[in-house]
Picture 1 (tube, helix red, strand yellow):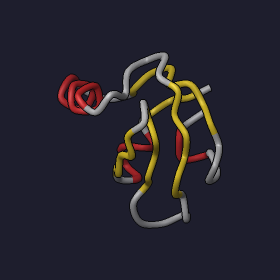
Picture 2 (cartoon, rainbow, N blue to C red):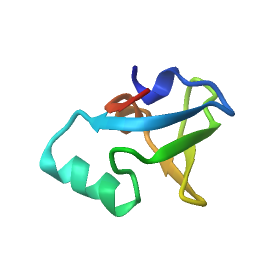
Picture 3 (cartoon, one colour):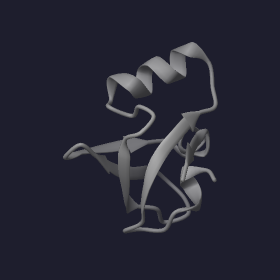
Picture 4 (cartoon, helix red, strand yellow):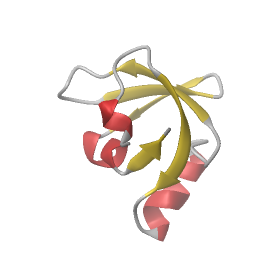
Length: 71
């Protein structure tokens, strides 16, 4: 399922990123790699999407978040 389906406080494991090499490398630089555990900090249904990964908070757009498949 896409990351955008998780509600605030939800945790999941990143499985894949649906996108080009540039998107995958940008997210990898932020620590978003397959197998990483993510926690949704903010998902208000609009605006930025805030997640926690490896002790850091990351703000990404909804378009990027919808391309991240989690389990």
